[in-house]
Image (tube, rainbow, N blue to C red):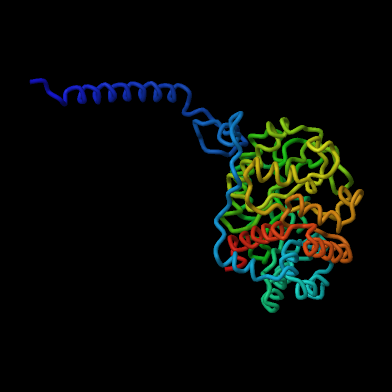
Length: 407
């Protein structure tokens, strides 16, 4: 009688012999070459047999993935529904201010309005102890008034690009040796800033190129910047420091800084996909909670409006194509790149309709108040859909819960 198990035994033996032979060949090759092939020096990424670009760039013709974020808890949904429209609108604003202590005018507005956050600038900072007290006051005011705790943000792009001088990060991205070094620096930055009541950063810069941003840019190689983005975002998330990768869809090839005036990026969508969008995909995959929208002009809409005010970019590209479900936050609407062509209140309404969730405005308190009033009127009249306001508020509150501001 024929043994029914014999073919299976032979098959197992053949597979084992093949596996052993393949393993010996690989081992010999590694011995000859001194181990596995090294990754690019600045990538800081672990060895992976799948290329980095293949993992973050969809294959040609692939359908875009729908935006999927963390599920919104019932408590956040209930809070969002309970807030009256005036407080919902206030949650969408992040304001700069003058002053270095609790007498600053912004604290009066924090009591009157349920503002989404404040952004610290160099003029607000004198020393770490003062910073801790100033930033902590924002949370104290919110608690006393029964408001949602506001973000306390800063722009710390490294070294001389820090709004809070003398505090980390000590190195600019372009001066770092590896993404691993960037991650270590980010961990130290997060620990220091959270200890001083700063809850988030407007950063990291994940632009590509050697344009006007200078040493704020890590590299002119998209894959290296993507490795940097992933490492820094992961480090900030691990330390519970909110971050906003910038400047979407890429400012590395701009002809000037948007803080100086209108800026142009002459790269079409196909070029941006091969270059500037790669680090943003990496940041999104690493779980970045926010992305800051650029004020530059792009060929996608014939250079007619800044990206931050353009729905096809802020919603079509960021949400629908890249699948980002977090908070979209504008660059400063008081920058000359905006105010050369728009009033701050008009820009605020346009940005929300384009798909922004939070509006950053430094500058005069009058412009900030006018922008809040303009958005509130637009929401009441239907110029901004109530559903658009609700979506933005839900994202903001979800991020605040995720990072421990609300429970």
